[in-house]
Length: 113
Length: 112
Image 1 (spheres, rainbow over the protein chains, first blue to last red):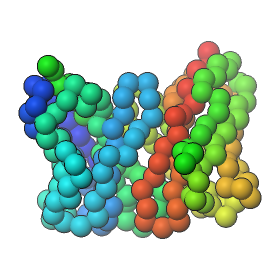
Image 2 (image 1 turned 90 degrees about the vertical axis):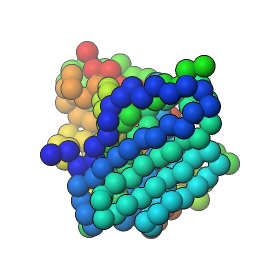
Image 3 (image 1 turned 135 degrees about the horizontal axis):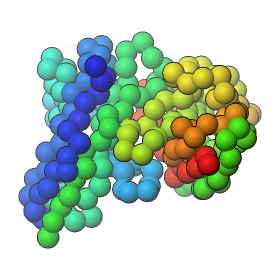
């Protein structure tokens, strides 16, 4: 069983719409959750991090965490073609060092004009 | 503010050879970790260094080794290269504690 699961996509949304990206994780003791954006051939870029249940907003991005359901999501409002990329969900597992993250395989987002 | 820098950007090696990849952490960061990302997959944790010691290791064989220097920069060494070692190698740095990781641009290693 994979520790962090994401739908591989592609998730296709029209420009200006809300893109919703989802992630589930298996380690119930996980405390820290991250979303990275990765353009093709490039390295992951930190978009959001969330440590507490609920919502966290930063500009057009909102991260949502539900620890009881072991579920993390990322909402992108007013999606732009430049948002087209692979979005990686990462979880810091319990009992591990702070730099050990478990990544999902990523969801490919395509925003079309 | 310099981010995480890695060198070289690309590398082509032959099976059985050895390779060294280098990383300088973001200013103010003292902890470095290395990840391997195969095509179409998420990054996988190799190991983490702080205070010049390996602190945690993922499921990678001993062929993968590293080092951290007093200025917090780091090296990743891979011996006896296999075709399956072809991947993007990512260095990430952070401050000690529960802070986000910031990745460098990576080194693309191709083993032929």
